[in-house]
Length: 204
Image 1 (cartoon, rainbow, N blue to C red):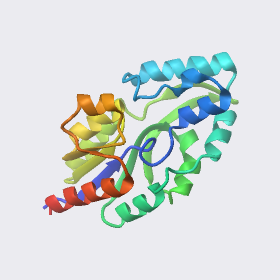
Image 2: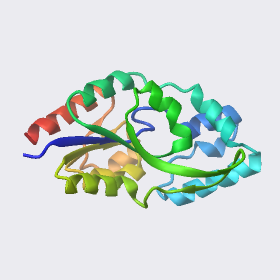
Image 3: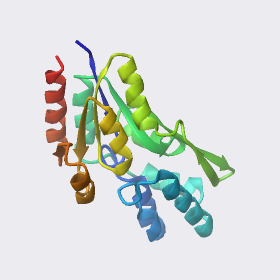
């Protein structure tokens, strides 16, 4: 019998979408595009970096927006309940320089994410922890003999869900649900917790 481990996406599952919040605060509408809209992460990020340069938006301004964000309603208690039944790791395509205020509000779950290259206040580029890091992290946990249950909401979560022993979509947009009907979809944290608990029990 393998011990179960849960991997979760952060934005859209536990927290609001950071770039959408930045777009709303700065008025740069194009920053609202996320991995729900553009599956190619490098294409998405290069577009964001160009917009930041064009509009003179520095790291401190983004961090000021993030500092005011709160976890999604119910996310904190969901995560607390989940961590009481299984080890839980947050796998995200966000950045170390963005995430800390939200992690504090979520009682400091383990987060594996990427890092920005910054000079002064200017965001110059980004560095992936690993290409395809979500799927590869799940595969690494499986190599450690964990049975992995994964949940996410966007195109960039699909590799993680496919690699996992059980994958679940959470509040995924209709285009993602249609393209990947093999994954059950939860629309609230209570349902998501029930689905994860059921998958854990199936592996016992």
